[in-house]
Length: 168
Image 1 (cartoon, rainbow, N blue to C red):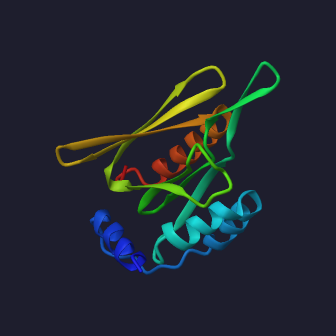
Image 2 (spheres, rainbow, N blue to C red; image 1 turned 60 degrees about the vertical axis):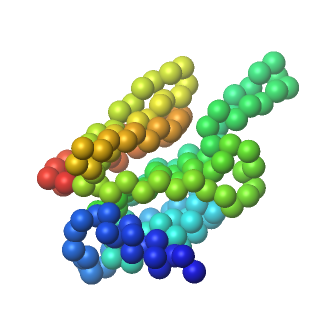
């Protein structure tokens, strides 16, 4: 019911004309994501990706737990998906409470407003900060990733940024 309106608002945030070019790699990337998480694949395909976007890549991270005293496990980072298209960065995160639910936190970052992405290492995790700016308004979105996932996101972001430097 709200989905068409949400898609319209997201497109308005891009400040660009719609591009009707099809993305041949879109379905192969979604199939690859489906092997890692059917739940996140559906969330991305059904709710986040716009019909006229080019899906350029993603990085998926399952829940990260830290073990204490061999018997206590504590979640330190939720399952997360970072996706990048020709129009936006999409961050989908589970809540920290129940991994079996289909509750997500969605963050849509128009690429024209992404200033930079910083990585702050800790012991086995990295804090990733996406810096956004629109006119005089700034915002940051932070999330915690394992080192390997953070490196994969850095590589993907750098590759896309270097291929289209005028937008980011």
